[in-house]
Image 1: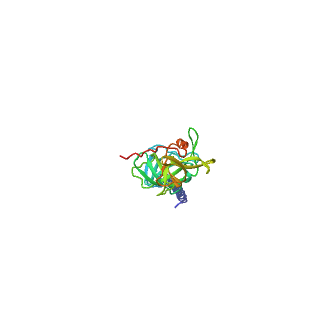
Image 2 (image 1 turned 180 degrees about the vertical axis):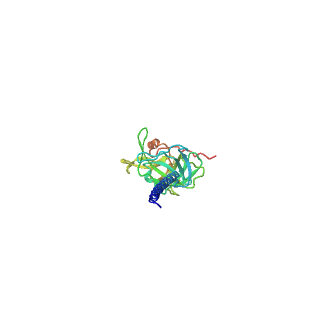
Image 3 (image 1 turned 120 degrees about the vertical axis):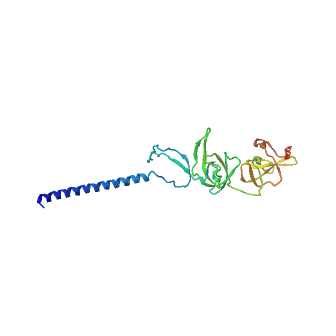
Length: 262
């Protein structure tokens, strides 16, 4: 082989080697592009952290969804809910929330099901008041979450509901209507009034009323427990508070006859 042919072969070899390196570089680029495409593809599929159904779909196919940043929330695509676990959010007044505890039983009534009462348990109590301003003054309520036990299958999210939370419960007690209680100034043995007030009820004895001081126990919406001061079977006066305040011992009254049940 001549020297010229050898030089030509070497040059051709160098060219082929350079072409090979260029092709290998293109292959690496193609692999990187493929990996990037696969990574992008994996990000187009989102798996829900819970089992459930789509209760709200915010976007349609082809719409642009914005990615969230630190200061700007992203587009909400959909809402997925596990309807086997239903919660009720209620607002409890600041004067009542002190008696509410985790685990207490509750009875929930949904407006859409007026004849249905669903049992539940308190599972969350707000640590701070909800700030709301009414027409006259600022209202302070606390958010309380009640988890329903065995909710019906046709119960839907977003329905209006109310709840009674059982903060205390007793059986076989003496209870009277709250409207029977009245405040009256204390009197000493001589009948002189003091600056202090005491709570009690007016008992009817031989068509005349007599004030009996009482001590209270737990209270419900309409009834209140009486621990001392009354006995079962005594007739008491129930009426508007303003009328009870006008009563005095030994006033003659006409008891209302009990209506006979038809």
